[in-house]
Length: 123
Length: 108
Image (cartoon, rainbow over the protein chains, first blue to last red):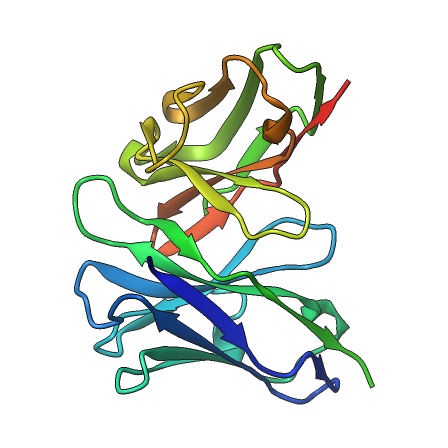
């Protein structure tokens, strides 16, 4: 059974960089059928896609966040990571990593999700 | 960017009743790229439907969905106690994903 697990600091200071890692277990990150994505959810609010990466390194991002986001992959560790620069209180959210289907006629959905990790931006 | 609007914001129903949730897009969506998720408090979203009408693995057949273009619908034929949750639609287009604001189905 595929599992995804987010890890990283739960508290980040304003103007600092938020860094999270998603570890994939029970399956390989090196499949052409999938991208690997980050989605966030501010407390009590809806879901916002941040960006996605292929194991080969190709990425694409939400245009509203693009200038602050870096997503990278480490195939040797079966992990992918998120860096969000210059954070403010508005970036406080639960951050989820998820597997994104990109192969087949019916695609572009997230079928496996991590449990999520709350990151609070505060001094 | 395609904006998704969901209605109603909250749906108050009793177990056993039928729930009909709407997702409307600001412009036409590729049906193959429309999905629905269920989220319970403190949990990650769970994929229910992909390709506008295909149930994900393990999703009971009381969940069904349909639609095309700008109008999509998720139907729960008979609400079970575990179905009370928030439901989100999601689309992919122009190299980005967007989610609707969600419909909360709560117990009347």
